[in-house]
Image: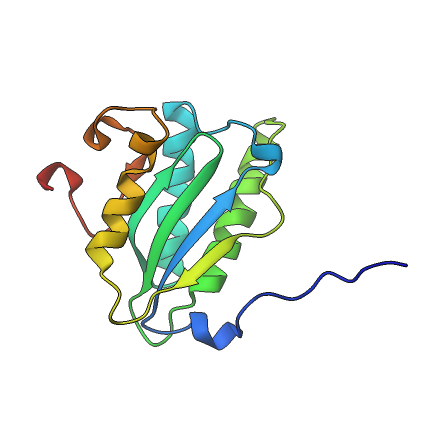
Length: 156
């Protein structure tokens, strides 16, 4: 008997407009991928392009060795966060295959739509602390594979 995969996505319209959502994208088989400046900068360029195209901002993007955290917000009523993430995965996946990397994105992604009462800065700081909790760095400021379209983290 074949078990049908259960749909666990929220309705698409909840990702549209001026909403905030935290996403986690994992590399298949949890293989380390984001371990060089070149890969990070190319992924960052793709992400920034997709964010602009979908009318979104990133409060933070942080690439751990085998996954990526994104806290994205729609800038207008026409923004589509789901489309933003799907497009980023598609374009970055194409970049990986074109540049002969054996890694690829895991099929799906994890997400959490933030409520208005959620503390946004607390969420950003939690993501910034990820490399610290994993023992990669002793100070989040020194972790190189992060950025934002809204903040200058050197001033935090």
